[in-house]
Image (cartoon, rainbow, N blue to C red; front, side, top):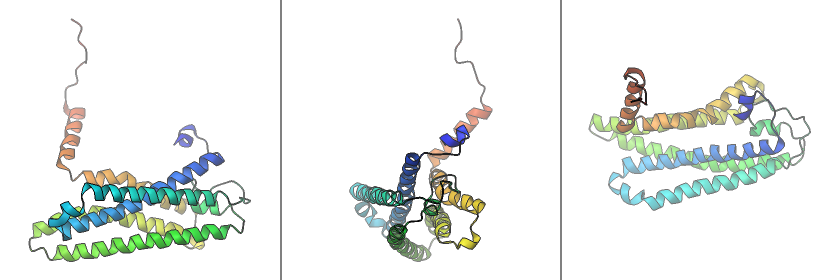
Length: 239
C-alpha cells in the first residue's frame, strides 16, 4: 500500500521477507478458518440438537488457537527456508508483492529442493483439510436433501452457499496459481490470479457473511438514508 501510494516499485530485502511471512500467515489462516467454518456448518445442520455442547466457547477457542499457531509456525519455517536460498537471477519480481513462485524463480541453488519439499508437505496438509472440507459438505447436502420442508432447505442452503462460494474461489485460483503449466504463465494472468485468491476472498467475507444479518442491513440502510435523504444542519449555532 505504501509503494502504491508513493508510486515506487521497490521493496527492501527485509520488507520483502516480512511481507512474505505475513502473506503465508494470512493465506494459511484463511484456509484453516474456512475448514473450521465447514465443520461448524456440518454440526449446525447434521447435529443441531448437540450444537451447543459440541461447538462451545472452549472448542472454538482451541480450534482458532490451533489454526493461528500452526500457520505462524509454518510461516516461520517457510520464510526462513525461502530467504536462506541464494538469489542469483536478478532482483525483479514479476508480481505486485513478494509471492512464493516469483521468489523461487530467482533462486539457483540446490537448496531449492528443500523448498520444494516444504511445499509438498504443505500440499499434503492442505490436501487433508480439503478432504475434510469436502466430506463435511457431502454430509451437509445429504442432510439438507432429507429436510421435508422447502423453507428449511432454503435456510440451510442460504447458510452454506456463501461459504462454499468463498471456498471455491479461494481454492480454485490458488491451486491454479501454483500448479498451472509454465506454458500458460503470463504477467497479467499471474496478477489476476494473485488478486483473486489473496485479495477477493478476505474482502468479500464481511459482505457475504454479514449481509444476512438483519441488524446490519438495517444499519447500512439507515446510514445510506442519512447520507442521501436527510437535511443536513450546521453542527453549531451561534446565539
